[in-house]
Structure formats: C-alpha cells, structure tokens
Length: 526
Image (cartoon, rainbow, N blue to C red; front, side, top):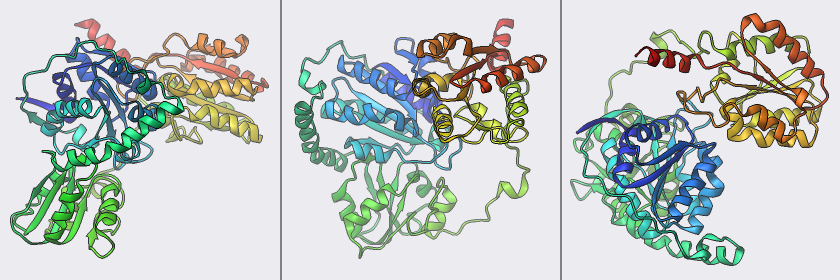
C-alpha cells in the first residue's frame, strides 16, 4: 500500500502500465504527475516541454514508434494542444497514448473552469474519469490496453480535488515497456486530404465500438437496490464519492456510476425506466446532463446544474450534492464569514516586485500608458500594492494584445511576460510585432525558472537575448537589467528610453526566483 496524491497515483499507474515517456508543461493541478515520474522512474523519458502542443506531438511521436506515452496538462493547456490532439484521433495511435487533462472547477488557479470532456467528445475518442485515487491508478493499464485495441488516444480527465487529495493505493506488479515497433502504415500518419478522409471515416465507424466498450466497462456500474426508485442519480467521476457519502441506499435512491465515455446509452435508458426522475451529478459543466436530456427526451424529469438543483458554477461538494438528494445537512462552516481573507502576494525579495515598482513609476508619467500582463506568478502584480497590469487573458497574450493596442493608437503599450511563458507562446507574438514594426515595449521578467508551478526548468533559460535577436529585435534595443532597488534609477531610465523608441524593444530584468534560490542554499548545506 502507498499513500499517494491523486496525481501521484496516476503517475505510478502510468509507470506500472509500461510507459516509455511522459511529456508535459507544468500547470496546476497536473504538475505533480510529471514530477513524480521524474523522481521515481528514471527509466521513463521525461523532460518539461516548451508548451502543451509540443508535449502532445512528442507523445504522439513515441506512440508512432510503438511505445506507450503519457501527456499531461491542465485544462486550459488543452486549448494549446488542440491541433495535435484532435488530429491524433484521425491518425490514430500505434503504442498506447493517454492524454491527462486536470480540470480546475472553481478556478483555484486558473482563468476559467472549462470541462475537458467536451474535447474528448469533440475528438470522438474514449474518455476515462476516475472517481478515486485507487481507480485513477487502476485505470491506467486499462486505458493503455483500450488505446492499443481501438488504435485511438484515450483522454483521462480528473479534477483538482482528486488530483490534490491523498488516499492509500494498492499497487500491482508493473508491466514491461513495449518494444520499439515504428508504424509502417504511412497513410495513417500523412494527413493529406485523401488519407484524412479515409481515416476520419474509420474514426466514425469506430463510434459504435466505443459505445459498446462503455456499456461493458467495469467503471460504469449500476447501484440499484430495488426495482423502482423515486430518484436515480447518474454520478460521474469524483461526484460518485460525494453521492455515496450521503448514503443513497438509506434514502431509497438508485445510483448509476459513469467513469467511461461515450455515455453508455442503453444502461442509462434502462436505469431511467426504473426511476421516476434523475439527478445528474458531475463536477464541471453540464456535459452529461445535456446529453441525457437529449437521450431521454423533454418529458423525462432531469435535475442538475441546468435546473439549479446543483450550483451552475464551481466545484461540487458532499454538502451541495446531499442537498440536491434531499438529505438534511448541518449548517456549513463558511470560511469567509470567520476568517480574514489573505490574498496571494509576490514573495518578499522577488525580482518581479522591483520590475513593477519601476514600471509603475514610469507609467505614471504617461497618462494613457497601458501595461498588458500574462500568465505566471507575476500576474499578482494586478493586486495591491502594485495594481500594475491592465490585462491577463491567456498564455502569451501580453505581447499580442500590446501589439493590437499599439496598432489602435495606445501609447505607450507595454507587455510584461515571464521567461517560461515567453518560450511557451510569446515568441510568435513578438515575431508578429517585429514584422509589423509595432511600437511596443516588451518586458521579459526572467527569474530563471517556471516559478508559479514550483520551480521547474524554463525552456529558454540563458537564451532570451539570442532568441530576441534571432527573431529580429535590433541589438541596441535588447536590454538586460538586474531588478534590485539599488538599480532603480538605471531601470527606469532604460524603460523611458525604450518607450521613446518607435519600434519593438525588449527589456530583460533577470534575477533568480527567491524560492528556487532558497532551495539551492538549503541543498548546499546538506
């Protein structure tokens, strides 16, 4: 037995399923999967990728070679990987390929709470959604076997509460890795229109087989103690735990657990005939609720997020699921009413603090200045005491939004982007700005790591000047500074000079993240 986070259970399950590589870009709540494999399975190829698209493509390449691979990302990373992800359903796979998407209902560390099950349905591939850490571990060899049987990638979707909670896991004997066996069928992999049409027709033909697999899946099961029930619950993934915590049997409630998709339609229809009404419990968006409504027709009473019986937004909990089941609940402790809020803040001594101090000082001299932010720990510059950024939309958007604003006449238009985010998706935006000679100032705040997710390697460390010069920024307008209070006069002078330049300029404030520096110092003392 091992006590593991859900993420760690997924990682160990993948290793024991015989993976040869894991490819990922760090993003909460998925990061610990790759970190666990890196720490505990040196035989598995693993290095952090530049972004989720490159991770997906590398995993697909390993699958092409006949070996099993895992690609991990948070839910918004699916947007970045979507091109390769959707097309991987058309090419199909050779070695088993599992795509792990960690969703974040309630947006604990994200800018939206999109539901990755939509992506799986869109791509028309099997989806697995474990209800527990043990099930997450057990599903991995099943998912890889299913992937290789169907010749399709499999999407596994988890949510924050499962990823970041612990449970005891019973482990099994690990499988050996697949032998090298590159695919020789080129028509599967060369998606010229003629090939793609044939491959797409094959994917459509497989849909009935996918449904059959879901109907017979050991992860979809009915818990029905009597022939009739006033209420039946279709409980998806982790919501199954919340339902069972409220003792549905004592309430005379029937339960159908769903953890493999596409939906087992016949099982749902049969289940519905034995219940007077259905409650759909799913963490995320009403994916199943909408499909079941269409399956059973408008006359069948269905409750869930769309009807207000469960909250339309945010995470499910045992309490709100119990309330929807009609189970009396005790008064809930509401932290906001009893605990003083403590919003997150940049670490004391962080170089980003000095960057924002300098930007605020200079921006105050320009009545129409706008500072476009990006995704990273430096996004906290939007909060007091800095209140320094005017936007934060998605990875890499700072540069391209600054470009668009400058095109519209905003002056000065300043972009702030972190080192890891710049290589993730900022370089192409900078190239657009250079090609259009946009009047923007780009600040690449370089703390030599991917700090927000715990200090993973940053793909462009010690390469940013070369990257910017290679893209075409004029050498005299690539400036490097050290963000310290004693250098404030120099930093503000350089910002003013680059704002005055009518073109693209890049300023790189570089100082190591305080957290990674502390870890290095601690390790050096050992």
